[in-house]
Amino acid sequence: GFEIVSVRHRDQWLFEVLAKKVRHAPPDPMLRIESNDQFLDEAYRVRLGREPDAGGKAFWRGRLEAGTPREVVIAALRE
Image 1 (cartoon, rainbow, N blue to C red):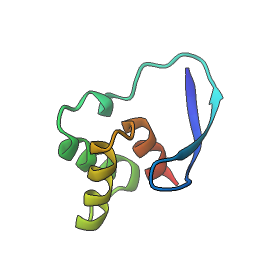
Image 2: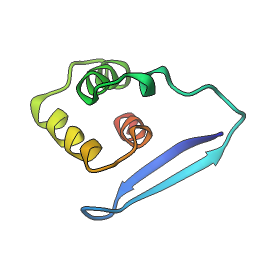
Image 3: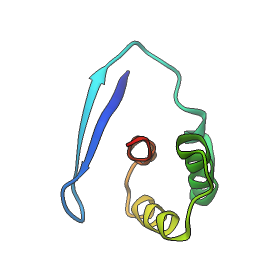
């Protein structure tokens, strides 16, 4: 598998992702959460230790609805 090291937002549609190869690990359980809202709530709690603010949640919901992978959201919340 790969571990995302950094994510850069280039423009409205383009992200640059830097990843490194690591030993295989099972997928993050957060990726199995069905709804985007529940996923974002959990991602904020686990990665940032807090509930999502309205603006941040709306931004990431929009990105997810536009096709941004959840792995990118998780990686971006780590930065």
